[in-house]
Length: 247
Image (tube, rainbow, N blue to C red; front, top):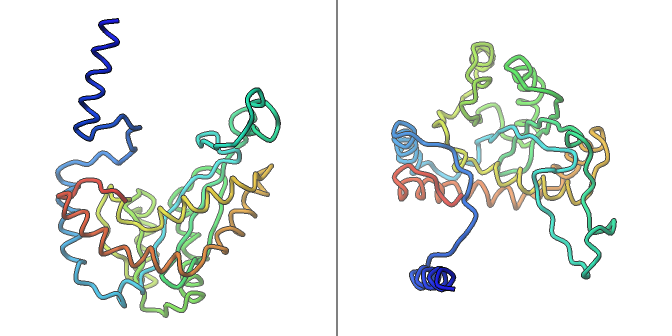
């Protein structure tokens, strides 16, 4: 009784101080060097015009699982119906497989979305750029003088990737390591995964098709809004002294 009372008293005191128990957010591990680089990047690009930002082609990769075994889905149900088919998520051994996606977008909308099975290495990545980078820029009417954004993943900084970018005169945004908070495409991945899992694809072929359909359905207004948020992301980095932000 005494222990329970003590816990209640402590909990009440924490709540009075504005503290509540919540699940900790997953964020990249940042070193002092990472935070310094983020601050320098934010200061450098704070004064970029919106016209310049609209010429950026943002890119990234993500993994999407067939049955979304790592995601939660909430349903409205009556007591005793937890195991009824409409209230369950189908699972198979080993999760049913997954695909890796590469995608890009600008303020003008979404560009190409490419799916690959298995690990994406530097050679695969270079081929994706070869077949999709300029086509995406053309589809989005960015012209030849656009800026390409990618993070510092090893396959992005590999020799064959750098050579391809240099040989094709691609201007690459100098991106700080460990800074997904700055990349607005992270929000599009979240939108995509929610939309795809609501459609419950039953195999990898269907998963890829639905991913591409839902990617194309993302409205231009959503893309414009995310790109317009970039200055606020930079300000948040400065306010946090280079540490992780709410984004």
